[in-house]
Image (cartoon, rainbow, N blue to C red):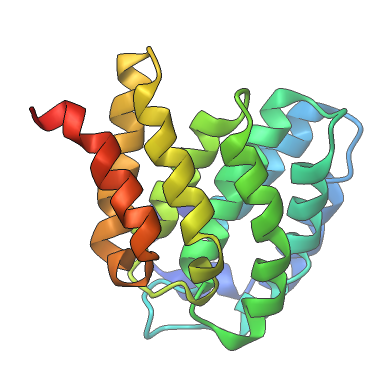
Length: 203
């Protein structure tokens, strides 16, 4: 809660070398609630290490090991649903905060295939789409996102035919943010599919 409402980021930055290993340790806990809360804490804390795109602290590199944890959580099939959802939320925040930095590109690229699968999965897709929205609303340009734009754009477009009005609205909202920021990088074929699927909502 404190990290979400910080005033002086440097106070939190000074604690990074102590806090980040503790967060990682909690992510290996046997109790699912502890893991989920640690992932949420990481997702909030990362913003204190880079309050604005221009203010990147050297302590931000302490977040690099987190991506390996997130990849494992997203790929796992035998973990609690709350942990998976927390991992998706955490990934969204980390990518939104570090997605333009060269040092983070290999780790982000490594997590994206599992992220796309979570968007395609019926159980996790709603939370994954929220994470995608977080990524698209970032103040920085996410370098690695170009590799998943066709798959993500196509999945969101297909979901517009779902029965749930709330879910359709969520997908439309995500598409708006995706196209607004990365529309010029989306392949023409995917763009045409999206336009075709949206016609029913216009006529």
